[in-house]
Length: 365
Image 1: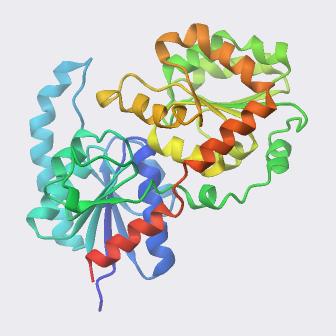
Image 2: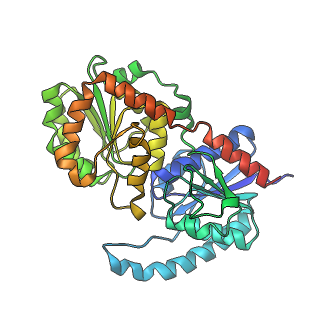
Image 3: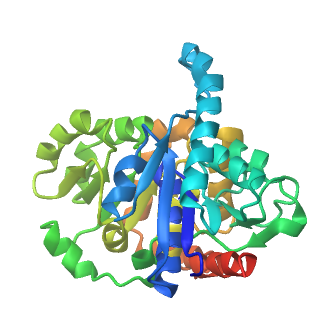
């Protein structure tokens, strides 16, 4: 029987998890008999999100370097050795046709061991500046799928394929009914709506700034849907009373595509997958890149849009003075919203998951 087993590793944030799921679903669409095993970090969000999507997952005892709690870094060598041993056991038992990595700590050991066992492997890099795991793996894997051009300085040119970022199929297809979203959230379709999202884990600084300015929404007659992230929800949720009937505060939005479609303006971090979803739907956005990421890659991601007048950029260090000033100017300017949205839509690379799976199939013929 032909080997139909695929091992996919990626996690830590939604930016690694959602591409992994998009790739799995495209493989499954082509062959319903395919078998999948996901591998993630045992204490990260993929251990809940992947089973919720209907797939099996195994967790590795692995973590990254801690900039603040440095004593925790003493355990990293032991975790790495143990996760490599775990990876050998997982791969020898599951015997996949190919191993696919979408980033995050757990993808390092599993892809490294896959190369030692001569199992074909693919990594998918979402950002304009690669993470350290993918840079280390570049010499080991068979193919590298990227979303941005000019990454030859990080990866072997012969391995690179520009595919774009795979996003959730429902966002790619844009099947949402905007009026249904307003009805579901009991909002007024005639009033402007702002979506605030600081990434799947939430953003402390964005949340603090929105909380400090929560009265702005009532004063201006603007509606709000706000994803805080689980860590910040308890602090932010009481502010929902101040929004009365014009806003909702959630720890996580399971219907992100629908809410994105409904929003007039989106305030967001500049993770690669978030930007790919914004461009797929063509949304006017204000991007606040996180400065706490490798090589400031979120700012580079955001500038790729703002330099093309496809988004507005507010740096975190200027957020207190500029975020709501920028929002106030944009939310009532429909012409400017349309301009940004149309330019954003032009940035989209459609059918990325299909192109990536084409490469996987070519690799395993």
